[in-house]
Image (cartoon, rainbow, N blue to C red; front, side, top):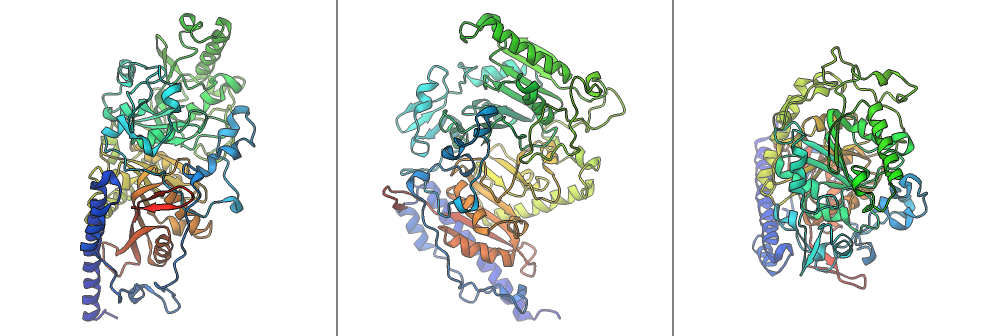
Length: 614
């Protein structure tokens, strides 16, 4: 039956009202973010009064989407979540220091992910430290971080000579130095660029192992290279937290006993600058893992011990014999992997990975390097790391790039990824890829009509919780922001490899667990179909509380899902100090998929387990 004209007018008026409301909603958000250095204050309160935008009492989502037995009761009592105790300000559930000490230290097992059992989870809101403010906008944030946001000075003392970070008044300043580049990352990268084709877009994605405060990744950004940096949560307090406060991609992580949460053939370049990883140990297991995640023809950089040991053994306080043995083992493993050493100058050595297995005689000699038994090189979640070779896709010619050649960036962003053009991901074709691109450009256009700050530079660190092919990230790609593309471990297909082939970065993750980051490290979180995906896997509040933990005060959330699901999300989010508005799909109110926009309110710890609002 065709809808009545009165129904059409009602739907239109409701849709117009919601859009107007959302404009008010984000106008208030803008006032907050432009006043008090990000803190909600009297200006924001006054703007809120002038733009009061309550939901119409007759707004009912049952009208067009509810079945006869549906129970979309918007008046359901809201569950209020209390603040956690102040000691949890920097709580990282799966890298909790107390829990870590219960695990073996061998091969850094205790620094890996060890998540709490269900009965140990916190069902409270992680407070921001007193005095917390919005980070500086990029690129100023690269060099300055407010002290109140990460109130730890230990690195300013421990790494003073190496120029990592300096404390100046109420801010930390990052001069761009590092253990191996005290004169600055720029000059160091210039040295690398004399060997590696960084300038022409051939190298776009990089992996920084043991990244410190991620200055290498920070300075690569202006060269259009996107680095995934990781370091453990250890005695170098808050190093990854500093990186994210600077607006640089980073996660808590370590090369230990389980595989890295990245797909095979992901990175154009991998880097270790005095990262203290025992590359030759365990039959070269960590080098073999780098080989797995490095693209054919990609580069591995090792700077610092043991490179140039003859000159530096005294400064490093190690014997010649020890250092020589270490380098010999590294050279041996590199040779087995058919990596070509393209440069060694000073304390920097650079190897290049083989472009295919046909040109490597060691590949078929299992007496030298065992092949992995698994046929899924991307099946890595909690999988044990082994010193076994991940075979590359077969080729027909010794000069052919295994898996397919990739265009330089930015052309590769919207080109069909080789994994799709070669039908390596079941269910995806070149045509479906192009359609996905068009669809997400349409979605993002609709998002911008509601949240005009989306690509303004207000949101620097963005997360897509269910990234698919990375088309949301591609649609908003800009030097002003970066996106952590998360592919859930229970997703129908492992699409993360295709995301990397587009020149984007991301990670595998299970949203029933805590993400490997500190609290308050993302400015905007996008969740497409996440709650439907995890409907029978874990509790909705587990996921929402984790989103709240990693979202900054005044950060934004965009949730796209079925209306039935979003009504429950909206109700729960209201008890988490989020301001929320739900709007129709851009194709109209008859589409059951809706979009929920939310902003996390500003509030901080006030001591004695009290909290202070703006």
